[in-house]
Image (cartoon, rainbow, N blue to C red; front, side, top):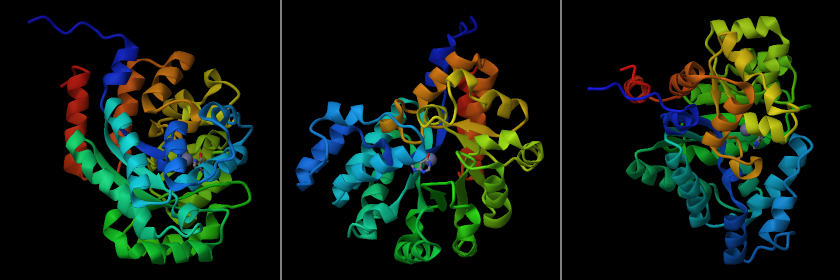
Length: 341
Ligand code: HPA
Ligand code: ZN
């Protein structure tokens, strides 16, 4: 027996088993499918063509993206639209060797247009179930839109509770600055009572104080983005000590100008400080790449190495909401890939 030859890093990054924990399903809607659904549903898009739409994907900050992202979601009307979108993502995720995906969805974007909660969750959930045939475990996390009121979030939770067994947790997304986590203290407390997992976007554009508030007021188990935490040494210590994972999205941070270049991304600093950082795609149809593109481009730009690759993949499984036995299974497969089993 000869030991397996060492694999080039890009091949290893692509092949290694991983979990994706920060993906907005509406952000996986590719322009081609968007136009197909627009036609199928008789919805008019304010763009003449796929090329025209792609040209609009030049963002200056989070809000400039969100405006286009919410407009794009208007083509989603029927249960099968939600299914088709989720199924397209799941196939891509499987191709990128994602073994587990915890998928965000924004029900308020749809219910505000008169689409029923059952239609949204029904289509997404059916795709997640079908993903088991691909060898991919997929779960849903319902996100509240933070630019709307807490009352609206409570209404949304109420509408979703008949489908409580079809989502594993709740999150908080949309325009961060001016909408601190504590605005949603009561609705998150209620979700906690209901036994839902809790996550929130914090420290994407917002200050470290928003990350503290997500931890101490909302009591989240993971922080989405969280990259601004590096500005606050005490916060970094807290995140490391309590092993609170950060779901980092490097290409998103680049496209929304959270960082000027990928070379200047602080992923390495987060790992060096002992944080449970992970790599994710956020809104891959808008930001130029799915999870493997995020790994490949970030490693090429920052010089991370094979040890970081293993650590990030392992962190993704540890940070997931999978059962302990499933986590162990995922990590065994990871160890086989790295010849460390
Ligand atoms: N931040 C906040 N809200 C979002 C994002 C994001 O990166 N993507 C989709 N909704
Ligand atoms: Zn996000």
